[in-house]
Length: 196
Image (cartoon, helix red, strand yellow):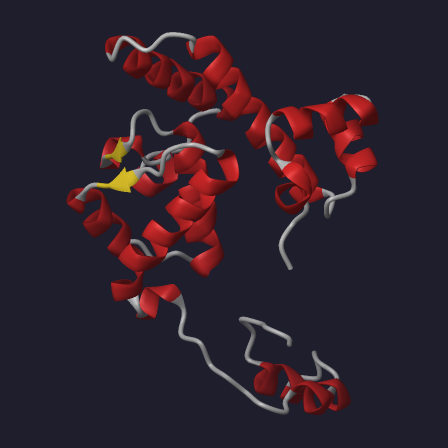
């Protein structure tokens, strides 16, 4: 199976794509319209990706408000479904509370200039801490540290295709330490390996 957002017919005619390879790949052709052409799918996909991210991280699934859904349906999503999936993963890790409002979206989705990454990350963490403290939660440092470590490890493993030695180097951990943390965080073999 091969996928592209390029018009391969045009690329072949322009001499930018090998014609023999095009014919080898072009056995059964399916055109999936981009997300901007099927905005009605955004709500269903967002719910699915929020639940998937919550399962992977072992946290409660976030919920989008109606205003947030309408706002997302007005977006073009140049990165297509993958961009929506990444947004949902970001919201699972960074959004304060379970209910997501437009103000909880990253700046690029609110039409604002992106804040410096470190500043944005810290302010999101501060909002989450405020929310937890306001609800009278206890043991929040352990819970947040656990969530933080899960997110870091999952991202490093995804980046390295599940190769733990490379992931441990990216994280600045020893391989045995990474393996122990994977077990402690309940990431197990199935969750510690990327899908596909």
